[in-house]
Length: 216
Image (cartoon, rainbow, N blue to C red; front, side, top):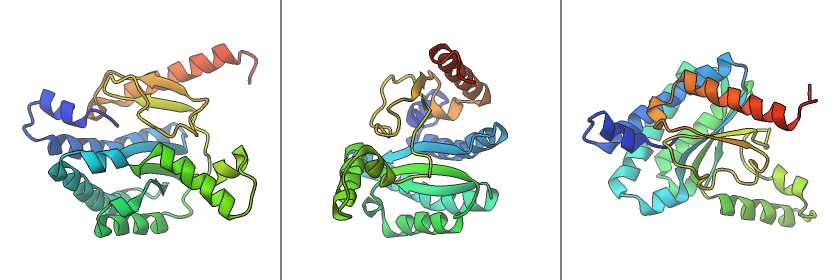
C-alpha cells in the first residue's frame, strides 16, 4: 500500500499524516472489493521494521496511533475477515501491540483471512521460522519452514500488486511469493480503485492462462 505521502502532496495536503490516514481508511474499501469477488486470503504491507527504525519519529508515532485507532473500528464494521499479524510487535508501543493482539483474538474463526505485515522484516521472518523448526527437533525442509511462517493458513501468494509506480518488491513476503505474478500500478495507494483491482486480476488471469493453457 505505497504512495500515501506522495498522494497527499499531489492533492494539496500539507501533512503526510493525512495521506497515511487516507491510505489506512482505503484498506476497508479493498476488503469489500475482495469479498465481493470471492477472494478470501489477502496480505497487506503496512509497516516494515526498517520504517520504524529509520523514518521520522513523529511520522512513525502517527502510524502507530492510526493502527491503534482504526483496528477496533475495523472490527465493528466487518465480520468477514480474520486478522493475522506478521512482524515483530515488540517494536510497537504496548497499547498498539495490545490492540492488534485483541483484534487477532476477536476475529478468530472468521471465514476470510487478512495478514497485516507490521514491524515486518522478511529475512528475520525466515530466520525465526528455521529456528522454530530446529527448536522443535525437526528437519528444516521447505514444508516445515513454511508451516512456521506467520499469517493466514494459505502461505503461497498468487498475486502481488505494488502501487505508486515503484517497481520493486521491498521485501514483501519473499518466501511466500516465490511463484507469484507481480503487477505494478502507477496509482498511489489512496487513488487505487476498484477498476485498478480488476485490471490487475485480469492481467493475473491472462498470464496464468498463457503459462498453463490446459489448466481448468
